[in-house]
Image (cartoon, rainbow, N blue to C red; front, top):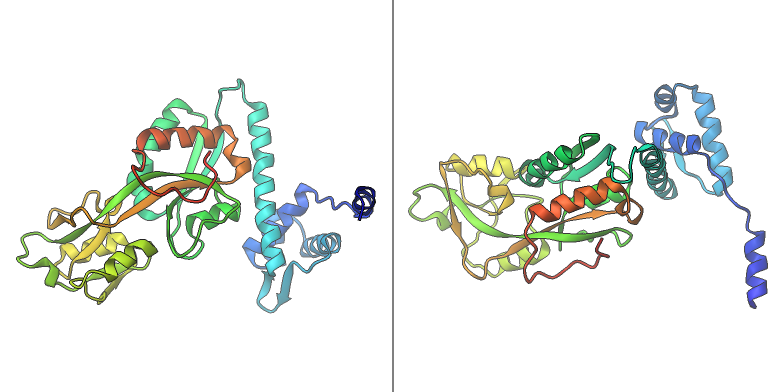
Length: 316
């Protein structure tokens, strides 16, 4: 096929124009799980929402929601449309905020951050303190997201967050459309009840989102580490159980910040496993003033990951 043939084929492809209000309808239906609830959220009628969704489906040529007694659930195509819709709407918000700013260096408006628990507790507070001191008109919010399944990177890819504090090297890879970088490499240590004569003999306390696949490989090679007999919801619960004498645990440095005095942290030696922690965002948000300002503060706070393997991401 010649270049002219390709051009004529492209010219015959009908353009699809979706208005911002149509995207808001898609997002509202997906998040509320029903046309009626979406209508209440949007201040309109159920029939108007239903009519809008049918119109969008006609434009795109795909079914976006499964309808039934359960309400409305996005189809796979619908889930992709909703994710893109959130990201487009967020960029419209950025357009307004950055256009209205008084000067090129002014950073204002909302900044949505997704972080796993220990990062939200121990990494972000000093970073956000400095960030808001420099940019008082910036309004950051932090949502704690478990690093299981899509995790914090999934929240960014789905348009639920502008930037995610993520762990790299887990069984769930970072979505390839995101950009980011490693901020720090934190070592794992053994934590156990203080003064215990033989902590390695204790039961292992663990939680689901603890380790990357690399760390699990290290664990498998240690014949002294038993199979976990106690499972906890998160790292805070693990520390509480260890401090109560219920077992020992192997935990990364962020999770051990402020460990109770009734616990003792023991180094695992030069071959100890480590965990890489970094940030991820979308290419379009990476260029925004708020995300750039946050990344600068994160980099200033965290030490570079010395000798670590960088994730397959474009660095911003």
